[in-house]
Image 1 (spheres, rainbow, N blue to C red):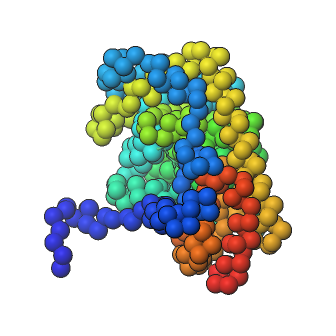
Image 2: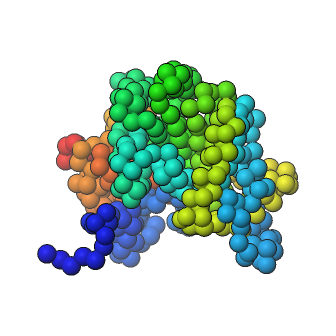
Image 3: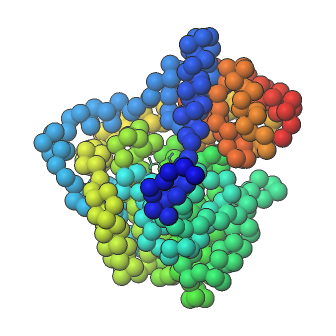
Length: 413
Ligand SMILES: Cc1ncc(COP(=O)(O)O)c(C=O)c1O
């Protein structure tokens, strides 16, 4: 038996980083065939044609305009008060719910997910999400002694499977007091799927009905990591979080990682929405406490940068303009892939917007490996291939769907 020093709850914690592995393989091959001949669709960040990180120039300029003595200081444990106000403002825009709302700064959306799981479920509890989901939702379950369960994401028409979702929620509500449901929309990772406004309406109505029985607490966690790269009108659903029952708490995770190209600054805000003042006071207190009990305070420069942009509408307008250019480029990249996929008959998960497109398959490892012969590098997931269209320009996307279809036909799955 190999030697282990860790406590029993940490035994066997290990997760090989698939993205890192695929990226490393792409870089190795590039040394042989030249970078220009490599299609590296593994990285989940916006990259230009040279594979360099795209950043928003106005965000960069604003960040470097900050006084170092100011940003080098600690931030308050809950975050700078103006940052929390700004985060709430930029998240909801004109669709702010009619409710009590407060926020606590977290290191990106990840910090918000962590605190929601920790503070709103018991040790040993289960929480729910769709069966296509971002892997760290499961990592966090293991990390915090929780379990994760899923519902089938899509119905037979490729719409959000409301029935499956609500059935799972009801099932869990029979055995657990608190039911935490994580919905990653709009621009879901890894599929690019978004709930329509009508689907949101039905989901909220279903959760409300359950909450009104007054036997459970329902916590709806909305992961909006990619919200800023969705078409205009994508914020409308936030209004549905107005005047909900006091035992139905909504938490929205604002993150500066993608929308402001500040991935490594680890800046975000966990925003609580409730019709009940006490629920929101408690939300603020427990999550502030958890900040102190985990990573202490967040990145002051990231918070200050948002405040600076928020206080200067011309700067914020500039950021929006720059971002819109990237959003349109993403739309163009997606169209290139999806049109070709349709033409060659390659099945893809329903895509609306966002950084990734997913091809469902049971042979993801084999197909991803085979595609490396064609200099195409994509990340195999348990049930599909995740194509990071954010990481490759349109010119390199052309031809990809055909190659994937050929590999899929050859290997099956
Ligand atoms: C679906 C989803 N949620 C949350 C996050 C968290 O990102 P961050 O913690 O950088 O905000 C990511 C990042 O990749 C993501 O894809």
